[in-house]
Every structure is written in structure tokens, then in C-alpha cells.
Length: 132
Image 1 (cartoon, helix red, strand yellow):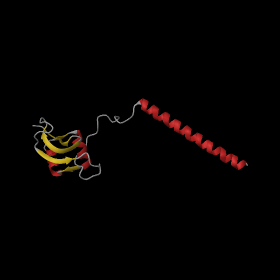
Image 2 (cartoon, one colour; image 1 turned 120 degrees about the vertical axis):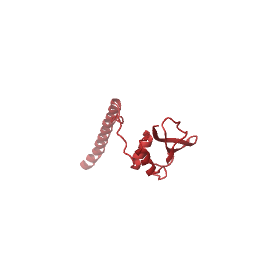
Image 3 (cartoon, helix red, strand yellow; image 1 turned 45 degrees about the horizontal axis):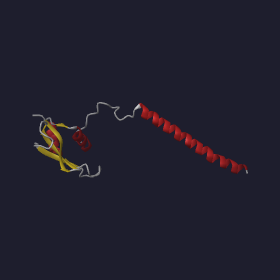
Image 4 (cartoon, helix red, strand yellow; image 1 turned 180 degrees about the vertical axis):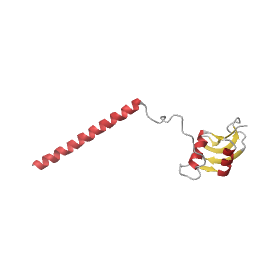
């Protein structure tokens, strides 16, 4: 039996609440599980201490016997300092495309030109005042 650490959804419509569970990987998401090892409440602020609660020794036990965490649980474990997450397969996934880069360059050029024009406009009255 392959075991996975994953989220089991609870809560009402549009108010999710998750249990972090060790379960058979073939069992349904919200079905029977072997053990509950924590909770996750995504509605709380990211810095709230009740957002993620883990029973650290049980999580380490399940990882020690070969349980595989899902992507989301792996992120939570990495943030808690229990297990380092593997790097992503595509390191360039967050980079913008060619057209987006071109648009950003155009915006930067226009902003620089506008700042230059504003500096020139403010320098002209100052030069006239010193001449008079």
C-alpha cells in the first residue's frame, strides 16, 4: 500500500478547511484515512500561527516509512522546516514572455522620456528667473 500525505477537505461551501492526513493513495480525497497529522486553514492570514498546525513527530514518522506528500503539503512542510521541497522542473516558469518583456521595456522608455521632459520643463523657468 502506498501512503501519501495530503489534504482532506472539510468546511462549508466557499469556506474551506483542510485536515492534513496520511492515507492510502488510492482512497478518495475525503474518504477513510490512516491518521490525521495536522490542519490547514487557508482563510487565515499567512502569518497567523493557526493557519497550519502539524504534529511534527508523526509527520516525520510517515515520511520515514515512505509516505509521499502532495505538492501543497510539500509546500507546507517546507515552510515548517520539516522537509525541503524539491526544486521545480521548469526554473523559467515564472519569467514573462517576449511580448511582456517588450511591453515593460516600452513602458520604461516612456516613463524615462516623461521624467526627462518634466525635468527640462522645470529647468526652463528657473533659468528665466536667474536671467531677469
